Structures are given as structure tokens and as C-alpha cells.
Image (cartoon, rainbow, N blue to C red):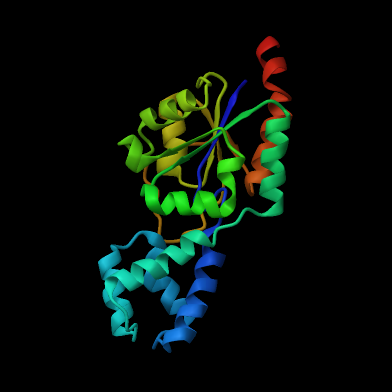
Length: 223
């Protein structure tokens, strides 16, 4: 069976809607002196140091401790859900004979919350989180680890993701083909110049294109 690897954040699950819903609740609950767009910007797409975000929230009226803030952030991670289209695409890939693996950069505790909340643990064969593997994408080791955990190899594998410098460059270094999705975070600036084999609008589109090209892993190997 061939391996299909997928990024988590802003690929399998999209962060912005969850963050905005959380932000609305936080502003209302604590009467923060910041509007929703300001809070989203302040939060920094999950890329800012958490202590800096906390300090800015306190300045905007957040009354809690740093631990309270961390607990509030956990609510974002727990709120991730798969869209029906993404769920159906993963089911179609499995039905076509593909092995599925999530390959994500991040901290184990937070990423596991997202995986549990979205139901992805029940839908994929393997998960690789950079903190527990010890390397981050684009290091090819994390892709090789994903393949080993899934009982597959990188031969004929694909990687789907939105981050050029992590997902697409990493796929290139690991010797696998890639599909690039639109990046949802305007803060990110990519410098590697890595080029994906395909472009897709979302996971469903990516899976459809891959299945069209490959048809099925067995037939693609015999052709």
C-alpha cells in the first residue's frame, strides 16, 4: 500500500474559524479591551511566544494567571473538527488502498488535543509529532518515521500541506511527491523556493487529484 502523509494545522483542520469562535467567547467573558480582529492578530497564529501573548492579553484586561491563559488556549485545540469534505476524502483514500499518516510540527500535548477532538486518531494509521520524534519538518527523518509507524515505505508516497518551507521542502528532501494547499496565515513568509508537484484548493481536492493520477497503489506499481 502507498502512503499518503498530511499536515495537520491549516491542512486537515483549519485554525482560523476555531480561533475566532474562541476569541469571541474570551472577549465577552472578560470584557477585553480589544476587538476580535485585534485578538486574532495579537494571538499571532500560534507562532508568538505564549508569555508575550499572555502579557498582551493582560494589558487588554484578561484577569487570569498564565495557567488560566494556557487552559483557555487548550479550548482552541479541543475545538478542531474535520469538515465533511475532508472526512470523506480520507475515507475515499483508505477505500482506494492508501495508508494515511499525519505529520505535524508542534508540541505533543497540544497536537494530541487537536487529533482527539477532530477524530483523526480513528481515521489514520500513524501520527508523527515533531516534539516526540525529535526533529521538525522539513527534516526527512520525520517522514521516514511516519512511514515506519504506518508499516509503509516512502516509495510512491505523497505529502499534502500548506507550508512550503516545512511540508513541500520536507517532501522534496524525503524524496516524495507533494501537493501544496493555500497558506491560511499571512504572517508566514516562505524562503525555500520549494515547488510542489501539484496545487490543490483543499484536502478533498488534493486527494481527488492524487487518486486520479494513481488510481490505486497496486495498479500504479504494476503499470
